[in-house]
Length: 141
Image (cartoon, rainbow, N blue to C red):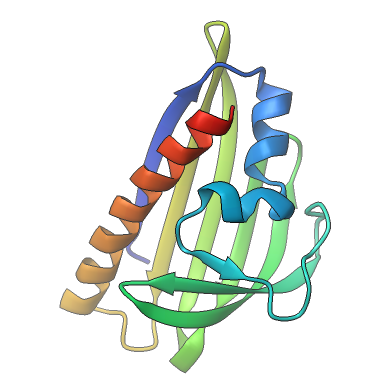
C-alpha cells in the first residue's frame, strides 16, 4: 500500500498532543482533507469502533468508512474503505520530544484504481495535505 508519513514537533505534553490530534470534534480545525461526518460525529476513538468520515482530496469528495484497529494513548491506527474498492490506512502517533511532543501521521491508499501512477499522484497530494494539516495542528497545540 503506497503511503506517506509526516511529523511535526509541538509544545504540548504527549498526552495533550494525542488528545488534540485524535479528537474528532477538532478535525475541522486542522485536518485539511476533513469535510464532515455524514452519519454524525463519532466520540473519542475506541478499539473496534466504526464511523464514516467525508473527506476531500484533489478536489474530489468521498466517504470513508473507518474502523479503529488500535488505540492506546500514544498511537491510533485506523483502516478504511473508500469508494470503488479503495482501501485506506491512517496512523497517528505521539512521542515525547524535549519539552514537547512529536506528532506523526501516516496515511496510505490502495485499490479501487489507486495503483501505479494514480497511487503516486494521490500519495503526493496526501503528503502535501498532511504537511498543511500538521502545521495547522501545531498552531492549535
